[in-house]
Length: 308
Image 1 (cartoon, rainbow, N blue to C red):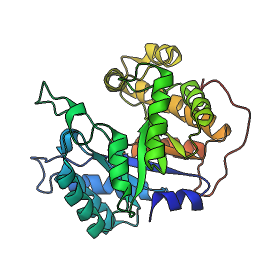
Image 2: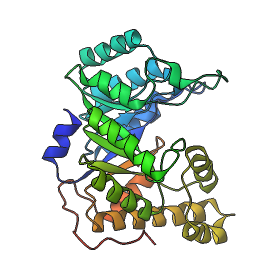
Image 3: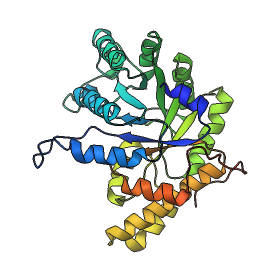
């Protein structure tokens, strides 16, 4: 089912992002067995959809497709493929999209993507797809897919200003995007401010906040440095007393993200998109604490400044 139709039908809900399992010398199934156990564990939350990531320069293209087909064949989940266009040509993109159509995969998250790591002088602006909006326009012509895009509450790292960033976001929407998922953030103020700018700019598609559970603080800091997301001082302060305790970090992080989600729901946010990192435990704990039910309507309350 197209995600655009799902969002029109369901007034609230959660979604999950996975990455293709890598080969594992310890197991003949290449890690697929444990991965599918996680997927089926999270299926109980009746998610809006499950998405699968796509490596830089299409480096996981085959594994992404294989993972999507495994999820589709073993569960009732609605699936979406991430798709990057950096370095791709229209001929190869056409072939890939036709493969998706044959497989009945109706949902695409259209991304520019990062340059392949082994190509130091790679210039993404010189390819047939310079920006994500070019890919959105290309996919839209097939009249088959529901198209999502990525948006950035703290602005894209390459955008010169917040104003330019929102202009670029509007271009992706105007090109044919049906919905958007945000980069992870840990201060809800960034999301609320972004939405104010987006609405003022005429962006009227659903913008689903991307939520990253905090269970390994050092890893989260690495993610943030890579994608230009910030860590609030309030989270740093909470982590300081427990930095020598992995369990303390995990407990503190889950409590923080749970409160972040509570604040979003209390302020009228309908949907939450979780970056699972292919783990179910933290997601289960957060959703249990939130007491989320698929059809539950969030409370409409006055907007706050953040989760804590």
